[in-house]
Structures are given as C-alpha cells and as structure tokens.
Length: 155
Image (cartoon, rainbow, N blue to C red):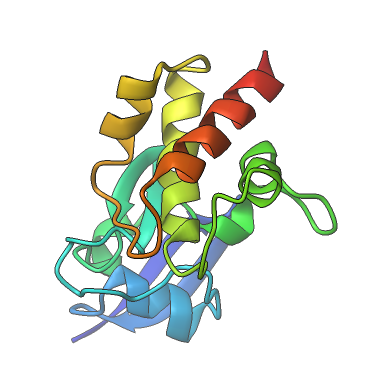
C-alpha cells in the first residue's frame, strides 16, 4: 500500500510516495539516489548498509522506510561536504582503513555514531561499536587505526 514518507535526509527535508513495505536501503538507493549505502547480506549481519537514524546506527536492510517518518536519517553522503572529506573519511583514506571499500560506508557511519557520543574511545570501545560491521578484506587493524586517528583529530 503506498504511503507518504516525510523525513529529514542528510539535513534536508524530503517527502516521497513509497510502498509501506519498502526497506530503507531500497529507499535510499532507488528513490533518493544515494548509493553509498551498500546492500550486502540483506539480513543485518554485515553492516554494509549502516546509516544513522536520529544519531543511532541502524541497518538499513532491516528497517522499513515507513518507520523513518519524521526522523533524521544520515548516510555516508551526509557527512563531510562537497570537496571536503569528514575527519573519518580522511582518516580511512590516510590510514588505509579501506581495502575494497564495500564495507567502508557502513564502518564510517558506525564509527561516526561512536565518536559523537564518545570523542575519545579506547580500542575496546571502537571494536564494540564496529562489532555489527564485517570486513572481508582486512584483519581490522587499519580500520581501528583509522577510527583512532579520527578521534585524535577531534581533540
């Protein structure tokens, strides 16, 4: 059944007609045209689709778009600014936190939520915050170092 969805997406109000069973990942990619949010496992296991909903990390593959009415949704495209990387994006680039890059948007969004609530996390806190995100390319060392570097930039 179609419905009107009104939300704030990356700081901008948006209203669209959507199906009531449309997943948020489908809404972001197919309706809003924001392809940074990756569709990975479709079961909430890999975290590639992690976005922030009202500042909290959520898997977009498990969230109905209709549940986001009146809420603030942030994607990888919403952090940083055109021509200027966010501190996390810059740290992932400089510290080689991305390998193939498929998991990187979800990792960055989960790390962004962590750094907003805890600007100086220790390694265990970083690992816990990223525990819902899988990387198939690395042993996570460079990802942890990237988050630590971004935390250091904020202090």
